[in-house]
Image (cartoon, rainbow, N blue to C red; front, side, top):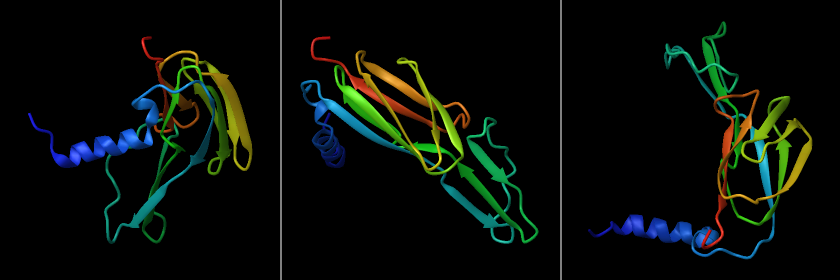
Length: 158
């Protein structure tokens, strides 16, 4: 079966920006810069009805009812970037900056690293990526939306 040209070009483009996917590189120092952000949006009930469905519980989504002028808003919290890729064996430093939200207590599952990011501050954690897999970076205050994936690519032949 022949692949569509657009899909092939997309695949080649991804391989060009993620060299670890085409060949495993020697272990190295990696710094990943991560921001805690809060995208927001809204409308006026005269132009767009207030949503009837409730947002999931947990603090990750905030839906504000219309104010006295009919304006309603929705916001969410997220880590940016949402996916980070390193190689097994790399020494990884995650440098977090708190932009929105007063604090974000987080855990990197699988490595069981926990800390708290505060608005206006830099929080750094450094560890050896000594196991391959996909590991969730979760803000325990803003679930379910504030999650990211750390992808640790396995060494060849592992």
